[in-house]
Image (cartoon, rainbow, N blue to C red; front, top):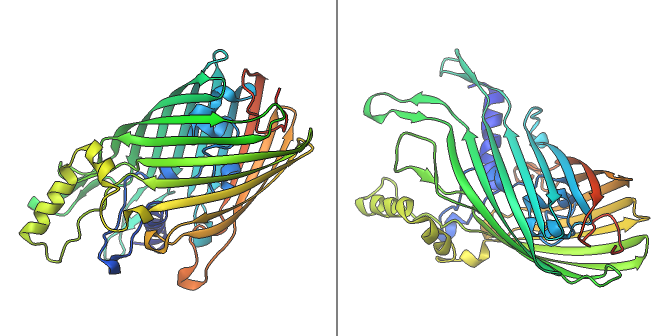
Length: 397
């Protein structure tokens, strides 16, 4: 396998280990991973500049990726956002990227329809045999397409549901011979989200918002012809809050914090080679019911440590310029990701341009592979909405 292929596959491994919960094996706790971890990557520049905090921030088109229940409260009747993130630039890889598209439209003062699309590409990989002979070129890629419905429950609270189709094509072909041969194929699954949002904004636009988002609830996904080998989707429970202080009619500041818990159970700790009891434990793990797996994600040693914390701050000046900063924290037993983010935004009439930057951290083997990550988002709003939650203005219409 060529060096470029190795680096891309290393990147894929880093996606799995850097976007899912990892626990310390030395404490006799197994690694918690999931399939399609790209669904947990922050796709837009606004949240990316605020340490990935977005569950309770004011509504914009990117709410389709965080909390759709905010959308009936958006000040614009509709909106679209297009985001692009060159991924793993710190590894010297130039054609791996995440792209996303989000949009919504308020049907009336209470109901909103929305759509979201995420596409992740690992670029082209040239495979070779042990002698260095060229075999085939393959482009691992994944995407998620979802539609959602949001409705106000009251003038200050809303609820949303969404349905998502997921396709993951990471490998293709048969490897091995005879009875030990394994056939890999593109995998697909269907998942759902449910979210709640409550805003406590005063007439001035000042106040506290909070929300709850449960995402990616679905059946396990299968990549091979072995029916027993299934991987759990990255079901997630997120709780967030955001407080906005208004300085005057042209400027405001928002402080936000999210907490996220992966609803995936830890696999059993097994020995090598596998014993009969190990095999039985693994079979029980893979065949447990989906709803049971969500509840079992709270059981076991140190499971309550598997909570990511995102904090962020956003300042709007003259209703046109936004400045953002954030910090993401993960427990050392849970992957140990820690990083600062910066971001900025510019709004002109109905158009907005945002970008964010993940500040490099660590040195040598401890250097975060996501360092130097840059996200770009172009957004547009249209029409006057029925809501009062405006991410681009400090006042309430």
